[in-house]
Image (cartoon, helix red, strand yellow):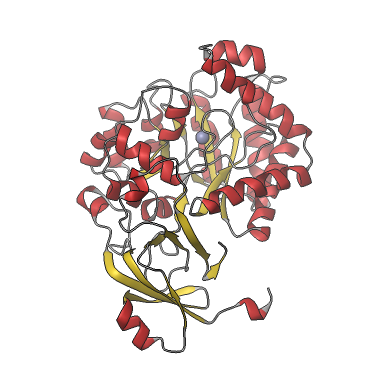
Length: 417
Ligand SMILES: [Zn+2]
């Protein structure tokens, strides 16, 4: 990096609301989800890419008199969004599926006619690493434009040893070559490839893919699509247990289409998160609570599939779960990188308050990625990932929808938009 690009001290001042999310150093639950730590007329100073002082603008101006001052003009400033569930790297799109769904065709009809997930696997296998990097850079830019500065990203459109490793290497390159921070997850068990038996594929995942991904340090987490027709409870337990032995932390796609006991499995294995949970019942929620597993709710996929079966966010909050919101960005069921859109869906469809939704999309998401001490809030010592929105009240982020409100984005103290 060119040294002249590094501003040693920068002060972002005069936000109408500086939404700090300051609070206990753990995931937020219950009433804490509504406590945003807002400083009116707030500002921060930044030194060496990290947040130095947080407070009232006039106080910071006095303390940081050598700083380059940026006037935020009475706008809202927040920590960059943390998107804890995305499928960032893939080739092509699923426009055929999209149009067939609009015509009212069923999931089975669509999978048969235009290929469903299998069609994305074919295109991703055929793409070179360079082609995937180019496509994923476009996706990474979309996330940044929407105010997201960290994403978890899953493999899972390769389904061979080499193609899964290829996708994970693309993520590593994106981490080096873009401003978006990528947290890599191995999702070899996304679907059984057409050319293999389920048993044979589970063995391949456990005996070859997982050891390579772990040895080359290409993934921090392991995920499984635990669902009828994909990987059942027993297969999912086998894969996740093997991953845990290799030092990977666990996430899981569970209870999306049926209440199959996936949430309970994630609790049994001590996973970091259980994701989707559209069909999870009271017992599943209680199991997640007992094991401190964070639920990751993905309303964008419910919306884009034209369903109304949203996860029961209010019950989960009342049960004391540290709820996370994410986009589930993927070409088939949730083609959106927009966290503001997800905030809108959380409030209108799942009856979360705007404050709860913002906590779920920042500090709680950061904790679910094992980064609660580095990102997700505007507190001294954390990375200076800041988004500025062209509005005066944080609730406007969830209220106006379909309008980009991003005004400026800072990643590690450097302005990138
Ligand atoms: Zn997903």
